[in-house]
Length: 265
Ligand code: SIN
Ligand code: NI
Image (cartoon, rainbow, N blue to C red; front, side, top):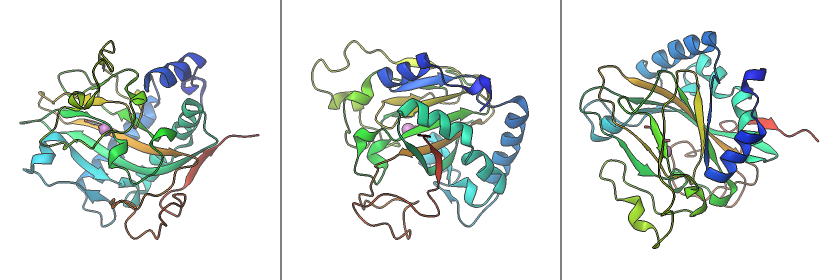
């Protein structure tokens, strides 16, 4: 990890307190150029192992043009999705002993009738038993993002609420309706514009949202989901665990879920 990517004590404390953090300049200029090229290719090519969640003109496509596990069809994407510096940052932020890869996804918000990504938590969609153990995502901006083209927003401290029901991302319920009276009342959403090559990390329980893209160019982002140690498989159906011979109640492991970072004794 270069000095520029070192996670500071302040960032670690912020992440643990609030459930998200912004890390600037995660990518060098050269890495940003390379990742843009690889992700463009991965999003456009029809690979057989990665999974495109919806087709153009679909309702979910208006929220997100999403491709899951780009690394399985594109070696260049594997280089970034398994990059040690991202995983090491996740290790520091969570304070866990190990960081395992769960999946990557290209997350593009397309121009033209773009819809916001509604307020939601990620953990309810994942087939795991330990929501409190802090699975998390890095979200890397490949374009400068602000409220006009789909930057993210987070509710500080919402990761402490616990796991709620999943939100339908096309016909969303209002996640705030699920809160007991007074919960998060003082916690106002924080909008996080980013420069291309910068990123956020968010806990899978943190309430987050992304604005619609009202510009005429795609908003390109790569997100990678990580598992700290102690995460076991719940048996709930999920694209990336299907056919992986995982046992209910046993740790998630195997060739699609490599260990990326480990704490040295
Ligand atoms: C988005 O990229 O619009 C949403 C990302 C997320 O929900 O984690
Ligand atoms: Ni999300």
